[in-house]
Length: 294
Image (cartoon, rainbow, N blue to C red):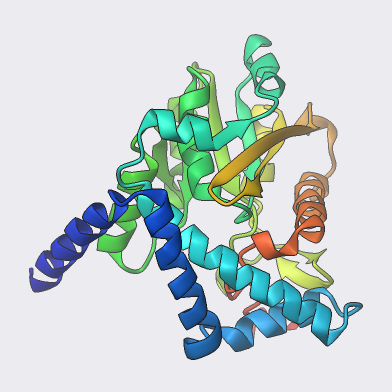
């Protein structure tokens, strides 16, 4: 009860914080960047290790440049995420735009639902808001519940402000069956880390063996709905442009693991173009193939 009350006060403060204009929020972001990078060194070892393993061909100086850019972007992402508390529909539509919505619409027009493969790249949180506003079809977001229920509920409340339906990972199949007679769009964050007991498949991602969830591939083959890759690229501070790319038209035509490899490789290519926009502070590589079963 005390924890709930304390989080209620925190949520109230964060809402008031979100009412500040963007120029003030970005001033806070500059301070956050300084503290994270120069003072606290937030997850510095994790980030440095991830970058070194992902880009062994780059020099230490090149990786340091990426690291510093990442911290600056992370600070902006923090305040932009908090801004979701009170962003108007007009502001969302102005600051996050998809350049080719027709790529998704053609699948809807053909009577198909759409399986979105995405990752923690750019401002994926704002992407959730604009996706819910961009199509009349139902938009579902698959998420992995956080250990802190109050914070998880707080985040999902922000994400669903404009109609997105949040679906816990373990209920994905149930929701798909429930909507079998409807057209919908469902987003899977393909770079989430499965627990060791859930790790059924490893592929090479950013130069290292990486455990990948197979849920997207399994549902694609079950429904034969197209797999479309989606990401938001940063144009400038506070402005993003999203892009859709159909990767798989008929999933049933593909062999086992092919779909997983294709969407994973697509994300890798996007990250390689602007690596500072991916979530390097995430402990993505917690275990290796040889650790499974130990």
